[in-house]
Length: 293
Image: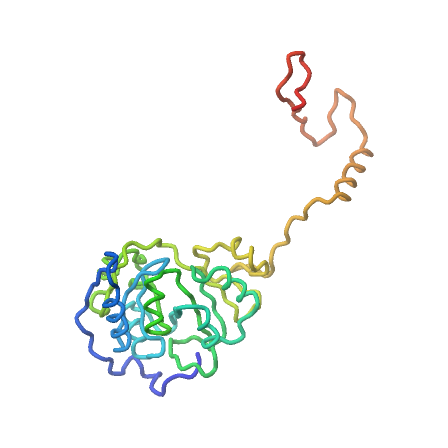
């Protein structure tokens, strides 16, 4: 994507730091999370992977600036470099350091849906020293709406992330499912209880169309996105469908004028090609006249 490390082409053959014995840390007790946050920081700094809850599903994370750690993440998922992971950040203030040419439509969506289940794809900063795989100079970014996840991100910095499951298997919505699938490939599992999943975030690509194109519809539907960015395209659309025009006073008057000029059929004959209208009915008064309420 952007500038890569010198040995990025041989990353799979590189020597990766040995994996420590995996741990599962309970973060649901409401107690002091300081030790868990410190452990997460140390695991990421050591070039290893951790699993943590997000606002969608559990994610497997690695230091986005550490090519060896990112490769460990891809290996754990049985995924190649042709499927680079997105990057989680703690807040939208980090976005400008990672992405360039963030269109206005993307900024509007971010203002409404971050933190939340929205991932945007933008062109990466040319000077960005990340090797996430075959990104073609782009980067996918999201701010999760999950307090624990953002607390960790404030300590670790941007992290490459993917759903905590082996590719092709169901996404994990609890830490045990994640551990069963990823096992010894992860150094630290943070148990934050069940997540809302399994529906993932919605991904919108802004690298071609400035109004954006949905490449994966998740929690946020296309209709919801268009409330903020009306020009965003669906995956297979070439243009935004035209909305039905609202009736105006002039159009209503014109319709009445045309109707008045139509020939009236005899009482015992309906115009060809029409259905017999259902007579309007309603509550009646005691004297048989239609109730005017």
